[in-house]
Amino acid sequence: MKKIKNIAIIGAGTAGLATAILFARQNIQVTLFEKVDCLQPVGAGLLLQPAGLAVFEHLGILADTLKLGAIVTGLEGRLANQRLLVNSHYHEIDPQHYGIGIHRATLCHLLSSKLQDYAASVTWKMAHDIHRLQEHQQGVTIFGQHLGLPFESNFDAVIIANGARSHLRPTSWVKVDKPYPWGAVWSIVPECQTLDPQILHQFYDCSQIMMGILPTGAIPQTPTQHLSSVFWSLPAQQLQQFLDNPQKHDFLLRQISSRWKPIADWLEQVMQKQDSLQWLSAQYRDVVMTKFGQGRIGVIGDAAHAMSPQLGQGANMALLDAWALGQAMQHFPDQQVDWTMFWQHYHQLRYPSTQFYQMLSRLLTPLYQSDSTWAGSFRDVSFYWMYQIPYLRKQMALTISGLKTSPLQHMNYAEIAQSQSQSPILSQN
Image 1 (cartoon, rainbow, N blue to C red):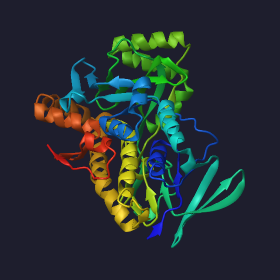
Image 2: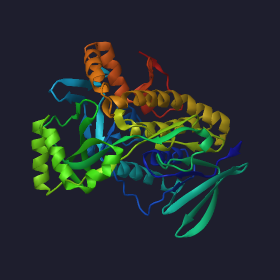
Image 3: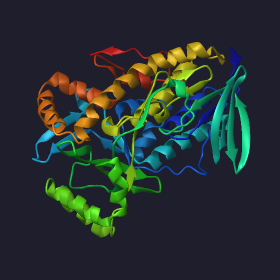
Image 4: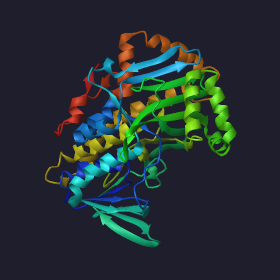
C-alpha cells in the first residue's frame, strides 16, 4: 500500500471528467490528459437516463442540467403502419423519474464547469498524445508526445478513458473488440414541434429502417434555442456514400414520407430554412473486457465497454463507472489504497450491470439494425404482446433507465444519488 499523490486520467470525455471530479473532491491530485488542443465535443445529442441523472445529483450538477437539457418522459417507437410498438415511460418505475436529452457540448460544459470547483487538485495536459503505459512497483509511467516532442510522466495510478477505439487498454483483458456492421447519420436541428417534445421518438420498418428524433435541449451559448437530434440508421459501408451524395438526402426524405409523412414534411421545412441539413456519421464498436482494472491501471467508459447505442446507455454507463470509482476510493479514506481490494469493490459495483447491458444490446440490436428477413417481424409480434403485460412493461422501463444489474435486480436511484460511502443495495423486483 502507498499513499496516493497523483492519478492520471487519459481522456476528458464524460467518464474522464466525472471521475476527475469525484477523485478531486476526495483530495486526490488528478492529471487529465487529452489529445486535442481544446475541448470541442462533437456528436449528436444523447439521453441521460435516470441512472446517469442519479450520478449528476451525486456530483451536484443536476439543477444546472435541468436549465439546459430537455426533460424526456419516455420512449415511443412507431411502425410504418402507424402502430405504436415501443411504449416505455419512466413513471412505470417511479412518478419522479425522467430522462434528460442533452447536447454533448452542454454535457461537457456542465462537467468541466463543476471540475473548476476543484481546480487546485486538477492539472490539465492538453494536446498530449499518449502512446503507451508501463506499470511498475512505484506506479505507472506514461509515454507520449506533446508538440512534436516525446515525454514521460510517472503517476501512482492511471485510468484509461479515451474512448471505444482506445489502443491503451491491456490486450490481455480484451475479449471482443470489433466494429458494428451498422451505424447512423445524424443532424442537430431546431426542436421538432410536430411531435411531443418530451418523448424520444423512434420509427421502424422491418430491421433495415430505423429513425430517431431526440429532444436535445440547448447549448450554453444559445440557451433559449431548443434543439432536436435526428438519427437515420445505415449499414456502416453506406455512411460515407450518404454524406458525399446530396441526392441521398432527397432519397431519405422520400423514404420517410412514404411511411411517416408528417415527419418528412417537418424535415423538409427544416431543410428549406437551413438550405440543407448538415449530416454527420456515427460508427460504433463492440468492446467486451474480462476485467476493468488490476494493479494500478483501470479502464472505464467506452474504452471498457463500448456497445451499440440501441439501449441509449453509453453516457450513463460512463457516469456510473466514475461513480463506482469514487465509491471504491471511499473505502480508503486515509488514501492508503490496497489496489486489489479497490478493484474488487469496483467490479462488484460495475461488472453485473455492464455484463447485463452488453448482453441485451447484442441481442436487441439485430432486431433494429440488420439485414435479417425475420428479425423485424419477430420484434413487432413479441414486443407488442410484452407491452400488454404491466410487469414486463415495468421491466422494460427499468431496463431503459440504466438501473438494471440482472433480469431480477436493479440499483436504487437514491443510493446512487447520495454522497455516502456505502455500496448500493441491489433491489429485488
